[in-house]
Image (cartoon, rainbow, N blue to C red; front, top):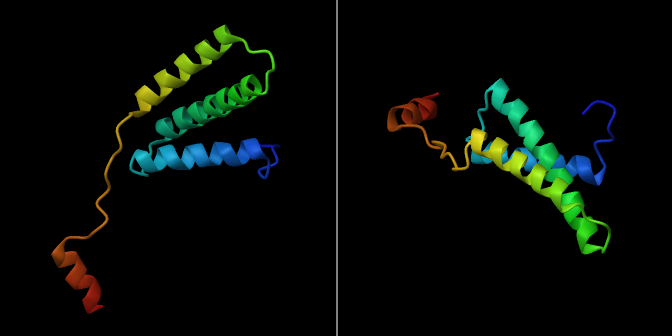
Length: 101
């Protein structure tokens, strides 16, 4: 996000979404997954902004919101909606080898 103040609320929310989904996917994403995730996070931030506007009583374009929501759903489905578990403990031989050093 070149030229964007990373301290803004939207930039922070973007990073939160990316971090959360990346963690759900196991943390080791391919370049293609990173691109899909960036698009999904952008759409999610956009949708959240529209939801805030709706809650504030501002005009709401339901067709545009539905279109973005469907695009977001498709991107997330492409990434995978199931949480991927990570092996956080080494096998016994690796553990013992690491302790011996």
